[in-house]
Amino acid sequence: MLQPNGIPLDTAAIVSTVLEGILYGFSVFMFIGTIWSLTTGRKSSEFNSRMITVACLLLIISTTHMVIDIIRTQEGLVKYRDTFYSGPDGPNGPLGFFSDVAEWSFVAKNLIYTLQTLVGDGVVIYRCYVVWQSRLVVIVPLLLWCSVAVTGAGCVYSETQATTDKENIFASGTGPWITAFLVSTLVANLISTTLLAYRIWNVSRRVGHIQVQKSTLWPFLRIILDSGILYSITLLAALLCFVAKNRGHYVLLDMIMPIISITFYLVIIRVTLKKSSSQDHHARPTPPIFHGFTASEIPFYNDTPSSAYPLKRLEVHMTHMTETHEDEPADSPNNKKDRLSTNEDIESVQEIVEDKFDV
Image (cartoon, rainbow, N blue to C red; front, side):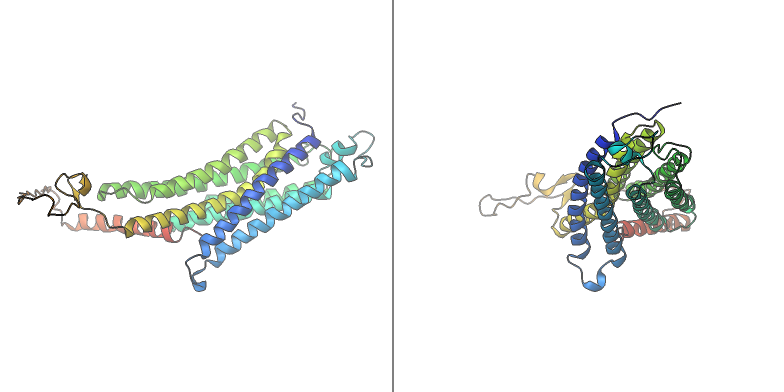
């Protein structure tokens, strides 16, 4: 049987607080950018109140967790450094304080972490529903979200009831709950992110078959994958550390708190920047295209005044060829129906992702 290993708990408390503080500061900066993205250039009636509420809620929850973490570190290393006593058989001092799973600050941290996870996972699942416009697609993620809520509550309750082995978080009373919680949220995020990415990829692929220009959805696909991978990798590392009974999971779990906020803010900011760049691109006049060359690449197409160089008349003969299949005319009802269905799907997903994906 594996024994608890890794860095000492007092060292883990210092490292986790410092790293969480750095990421928290970055999340606050991104929160400001998110609010700016959701309000700038819009009338008050056009504000997405739900998205602003979620952004503020994530900031409040992560701030509360950060404050409790600072208090816990100060109490463990300073206030109760010489007075904390966990019993004749348990560690005392800072090691005993940080290993006590029934200590109020530890229970409060896990409760707040559960709330943050539920909010973050709920947003990803809702985005999946918005893009697919189908309740059946999100049934499994919703069930996993419920599992996150149940196992998170089980974690908190088991910690408050810990009496024997309360200095060992890997004990049978708390360990299985935490493992189930981490597995549930990891699988829920992987499934939701995969469904989102597949939907956008599928529509982008269909755009390539009917349009010459590159689909505008590819950048959004990368945004979704980047955010999902960032969170999933950190969560997987925490799960592996916990299963291996490595105390490094304390550091990773504290880092995940601001990472949940960062991934949420990151999607909104990058989508807003992409939409702005797309609008600027469409607003600029585009030179005509000649058979794969832009106008600036054609020798006889330039802005030089006509008085500088005399130009001769240029005659261009163009032949237009149309190829049709006899077995299925281009204007047949089936082809019209397929094109109409494809265009409707593409326009629907593009509108949702480009204009409504801040939900």
